[in-house]
Image (cartoon, rainbow, N blue to C red; front, side):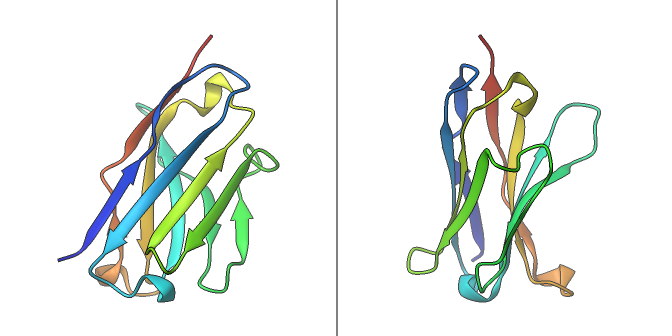
Length: 118
């Protein structure tokens, strides 16, 4: 059974940090590209960060220098460390396990809310 479960969301003040975790099971985690997306109401889901199986990383311009994506293949877990948080980072954050080119073998988590406010 495939599981993709995010955690670590919550409330933070501007300038603070949060780390999201994405714990997975049921597929070959080390072969997957892992991505973090975020979404606010009435807007399209936005790609925030990506890490490939060989640990190449990319970031949206809006989070570059503030967010860090990482992975631990022994724990089948991806992380998103978010620092210098801003109110505009408020969103539901989703983890996506991407079997690139194989959409039927790619998996979404259920999302975790991050709220940044004074």
